[in-house]
Length: 154
Image 1 (cartoon, rainbow, N blue to C red):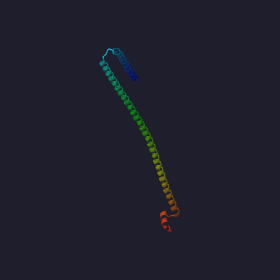
Image 2: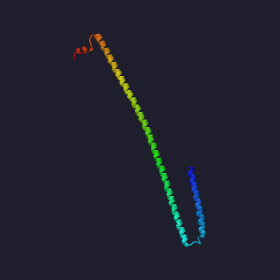
Image 3: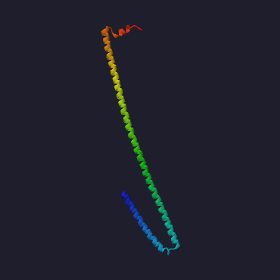
Image 4: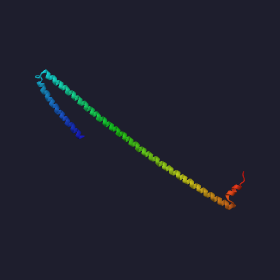
């Protein structure tokens, strides 16, 4: 930043030096004006008008360059903001997807636990039924299948 200021101050100093020279030349011209012929004065006026037009063009070019720099900086800022927004969206999506996966893993584990409980209950029911069948056979002396066949129809 300081380097740019130094460059600008140097350029300003050169312009002031040039202005001083032009002022001195204008003072000399004012003195010599009486002596110059009318054609020489017209030539100086033409030269001065050309210098003014050149200065105006230089100002216009400098203004366009500054606008271009400003536009570039604005575009860069917009792209940076868009990139940050996209990064935040990605981070949020990643977090939400991670939560979704964790929840579903927990759900799957609960389903397997429930299935294991149901299978254990079924095994218990089988064992209890076999125990009841053995008690039936011990009490009544016949297998459960034969007793079910002899049962009168209602």
